[in-house]
Amino acid sequence: MKVVIIGGDAAGMSAAMEIVRNNKSAHVVVLEKGEVYSYGQCGLPYVINGKVPHAEDLIARDVEEFRSKYGIDARIFHEVTAVDTKLQKVCGIDVNSKEPFEFIYDKLLIATGASPTMPKIENANLKGIHTVKTIPQMNELMEQLPNVKHVTVIGGGYIGLEVVETVRERGLDVRLIQRGSNLMSILDTQLTELIYEEAIKNGVEVLLNEDTIGYVGTEFVEAVRTNSGVHTTDLVIVATGVRPNTQFAQGFAKLENGALIVNEQMETSIPNVYAAGDCASHFNRVNQKDDYLPLGTTANKQGRIAGLNIAGFNQKFRGIVGTSILKFFDLHIGMTGLNNEAADRLNALVEAYVMEVNDIASYYPNVQPMKLRMLVEQHSRKLVGLQIVGKHGVDKRIDVFATALYNEMTFEELLNLDLAYAPPFSGVWDAIMQAPKRYGKKE
Image 1 (tube, one colour):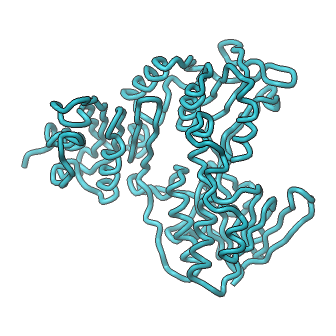
Image 2 (cartoon, rainbow, N blue to C red; image 1 turned 30 degrees about the horizontal axis):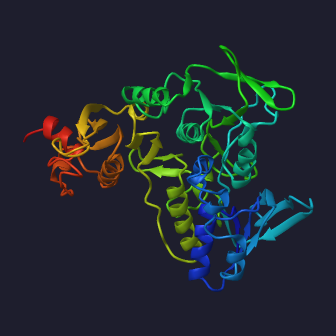
Image 3 (tube, rainbow, N blue to C red; image 1 turned 90 degrees about the horizontal axis):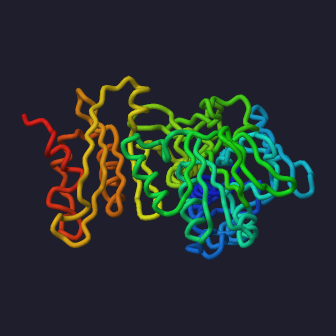
């Protein structure tokens, strides 16, 4: 069996490893556009502040290990430009030599990930304007940072906030430009004010409701032009989101943003072609729809499922519930499930419970408040979503709630959970139990 995998990172190499472990007759070829295999993209911002000493420390396995130890035909600088699904053939060019190549496949996995969006605006090709998605991109940024005093970050989502924190911890002045009225706009507005206050407390200049319309400079960027004015800077980091790398894949069913729609077995709409990771759809168990929430955890899980199915098993990807967490200076920001906007799109009638709760027992030293916002379906009482902003213990509560969501528990059933308790870790009624204890229905 000839297997071709496009993409040598999380989803692609998770799949490749499952195939070579479980089907000894499979010949696996991996085509990677760059030269780096299997690295932890989520760790890249922490190279900036030195918590990760070198970007290369994020590499889990290098290309030579895949070749010599596992027998995978791992290619580098092989950019795929087209897939002929009738002839079952992958076509592309060698990035260095510009020579064309072709590979015939019995099974194909598209695991090309996503690329940062770079708005097409005036002077976007100036030097000193960066994105942080790959190790080469990070190394290029790190070469310029020693000569920089002021950095502008465009975008107030996950990556934007992580970059703002790490640049500020490096001792540089930072400006954050956000086109909307809130930072971390995936959260409901009752919690976003806490994030804004944390940014200001840590010396970040925050500009809300400003659209970036261009850059100023000759060779290097010298300023950012927005709808409100011109803001001088030494360097720009753009973190305005990502787009699935699926432009070469024609004739497939796709989401509106270009992500390839897959079923439980990670099969696309075309026979013998699978997709996984940031280039694929992610079935959301909460809204029961094909969604797009690109995260490393999901990419690895989908890649594993795709690899096992290609190897001859019958495995199913059971879906996501939309769980994520972020550190922003002293704040931990977590969410799982749907927010109000997503619930409104479903025309779901939900009740929102907003509370300030303690992370540990109220009498124990260093107790800290957490702001919690829980959504519950009005009639069924099923859990819909949870958002928490606090300093400690957010991860524990988000993970417990995500597990409850996955298992379709109700609001009142949270009270039945047998959770770990000791004063340094929790109150006797855990933070996520306090809303149903106070507001739950008594039969």
